[in-house]
Length: 160
Image 1 (cartoon, rainbow, N blue to C red):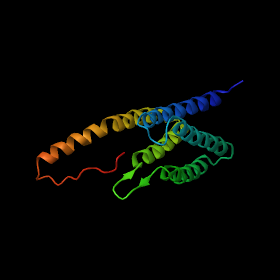
Image 2 (cartoon, rainbow, N blue to C red):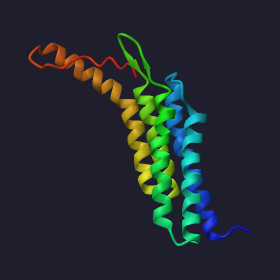
Image 3 (tube, helix red, strand yellow):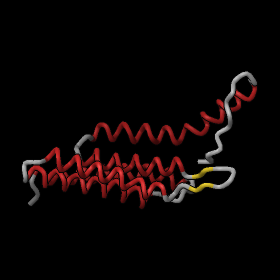
Image 4 (cartoon, one colour):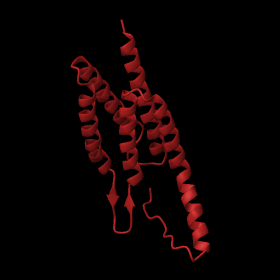
């Protein structure tokens, strides 16, 4: 039988998985190299480690220390996964948004593990709004700036 703590941990894991899937769906629909499965797994893994660190720390009276070290290691290490999707060609750099999405997904998994579900909900909505509306907004600003030659704005060449 599950305890209340177990039910809460499962809710955190489900929230992390949902957040990763939501962000991964955006990347999949845009044809990027990371999608639903990868970002779902990143969020789930980060939440799992955070939940395990919380339980271990609580059992040994060192919750904040154990969680802090776990989160620091996670967030530093996840950069390697994100770095793997960045491609540099002579004229463009591709994959920066996807790499940032990997890092954000890791942070969302940690936040789910810590039970900050309201923060996760806002961050997922904000991230999706940014990746869905950011491109059209940037293009509008660049068109506007190209009409007014007094504004020194260069076109974004990230391609992501």
